[in-house]
Amino acid sequence: MTSQLNVDTIVDKAGSGGTNVKVANNAVAVAEGGSATTNVVQGLAKTWVEGSNAAALTDSFNISGGTDNGTGDYSYTLTNSMSSRSYAINVCCHSGGLAATNNDSQQTSSYKAQIFSRTSTGSASDQINYSSVLGDLA
Image 1 (spheres, rainbow, N blue to C red):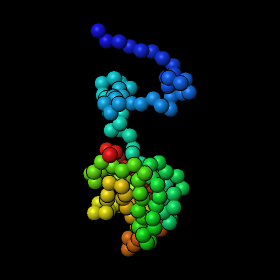
Image 2 (tube, rainbow, N blue to C red; image 1 turned 135 degrees about the horizontal axis):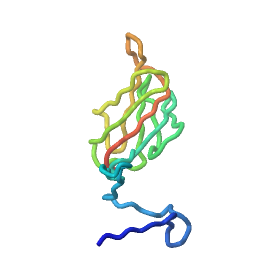
Image 3 (tube, rainbow, N blue to C red; image 1 turned 180 degrees about the vertical axis):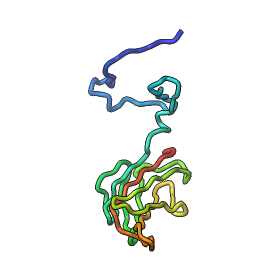
Image 4 (cartoon, rainbow, N blue to C red; image 1 turned 120 degrees about the horizontal axis):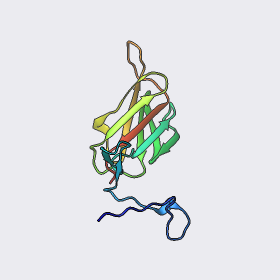
């Protein structure tokens, strides 16, 4: 026999709100149609960052800082490390440039975002950049 619990709000034992409610690694979300599911923990971005054209953090999640390594070459340090170097990085930039990552420099605690101009030369370009990381936290 299965059970169903219907509530409007979940709060912690102290009654202070949902800030201490934890979701297990095997929590599953059911799609709107009900036929597909996804693992909640696996499906979340583990970091995101908006970096200035000098790698300074404009806004971020799970990023402790950025480093400007040179024109269009930025590194970001994670607050909480990934479990391995096997994770996906998505990078884009503000002014229509081309973005890339350098897998050779990808570490469990940091990654690179590299930005290039969208000209025939494709030279490195300082631009506002955005990135996110998908994978398993340590």
